[in-house]
Image (cartoon, rainbow, N blue to C red; front, top):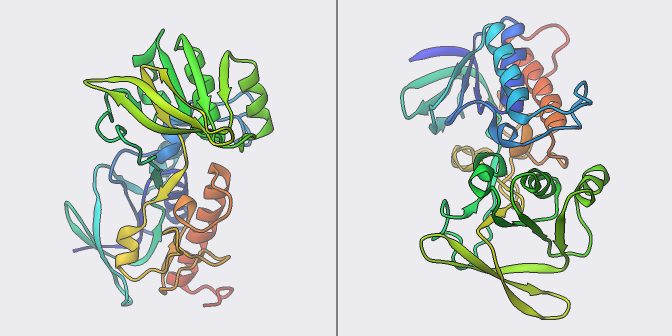
Length: 311
């Protein structure tokens, strides 16, 4: 089994930052990613709140720069390699993937999250046939078509703005009377031809070989109606990718998020966590990067025991 100083699980902004800081500190660093680098950030149409990019940058462009930087300083990034099992209770951490088994002196879990589904009739059956969770990935299929975006946070609003430049008609359904998105994004939305359906919940997605309509209910008036649409973009939050960590004995909260302290330490010595998979209250690229810097610095201290490190 090949031994590494640090193994990082996940190659989103948190994982790539952890890999960068681990390698820069002179540690032999491996980053494992079950898909391709970038995580959820890679499919974000436009990022306008990351410091230094005041004119905005696409999520894909940003994470490609992060991945290039990570590799240039010496970290190895393995794509399409999924972690299936951890044995991390001992001093040497054992990481089993679908391709190999490795050992490490320390680990950083930065596995991120995935989009939450609505669980309504028709959603699973029509997934990929009009039901999507990624406007950047699938928006081009709905040029000059009618779409409904579900959600009220930043992701939903950004997706609606992006789709407004492609689709002939964009509606945004939010179950409350006020958006959760940042004020700047809400103003951008108002400038687009997007109809917002307030206090509206999606109850069913209808179609045969593809989406044809949705059934929505106003949770204030009780009114139910059917709306003809060609596509539904679900943007109602995320679920942490933490099951493999939980099975290995890492503590998670009731939502499945990994519990980490202010030094990004988990309940297991030598194992740290950073980014959207943790209980951190703000899920942003900036906070993921900050947490990863702390985690990598702590992992270095754990391995090398410099004079300033306190276990």
